[in-house]
Length: 101
Image (cartoon, rainbow, N blue to C red; front, side, top):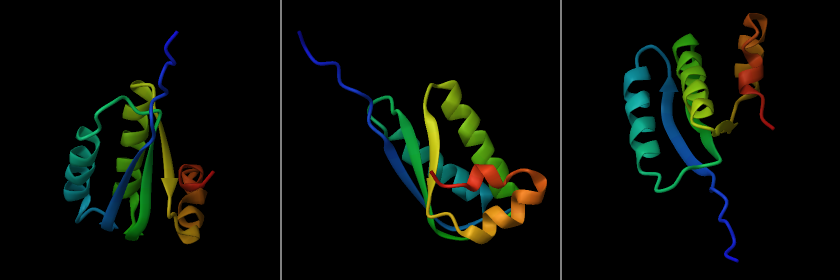
């Protein structure tokens, strides 16, 4: 009996800022990176270590990506999250999105 291969994680990285001025370019960069995935992924690891700042537009992009991935049966995991981002968005109950596992 053949072993069933588990879907792999897909890692994507962003550079620059996740803000109102750059959000459309970042969305296109993500779309390009995710479209090159050859197989269904168990999760997408989004590396934010190259991001300088995040505003509410960036949070909205992350929430949309999370929703779209979950609809397809995958999860979003974040890496390279700066502690100040979670602290900044915690009062709006959005800090949980930025918590690293």
